[in-house]
Length: 187
Image (tube, rainbow, N blue to C red; front, top):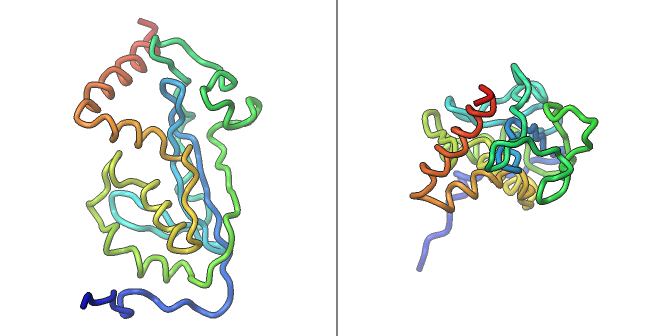
């Protein structure tokens, strides 16, 4: 018979409930789609994934951006106002798109430390990939571990589009970045 997963690998749920929230910050807008940086907030600690692995910090630490996101560029290189997004506006046009949006997801018997213990083997240092294994991948897995819910689809739409077009994705990326550079330089 098949052997079940070892309980030593999976932390035991702790007594009490922990508040779980999703933090999402728009970091880029290209061809009518927004790209987001996401993380999970458990009680008063943020958990996120980058090239050095799973990190813990004060809430919204990883959402501090050095400069505003690029303007929205459609396939022809023309700016699109947020109200013209195919899926409708994700934010009110008066809001700063750099501002993190924190959404309460629910509660969990698992703590942030339990989360790290359960997921660290899958999100190790040096395993970050901008499209295949990024902050959004971690956040989706973390939310599922903690609350059995998935991250909203808008948060990782760009990655799903690019990875679905593989191996054409390099060509698609080149066209997108070329349009961004031409728009920025006014060419």
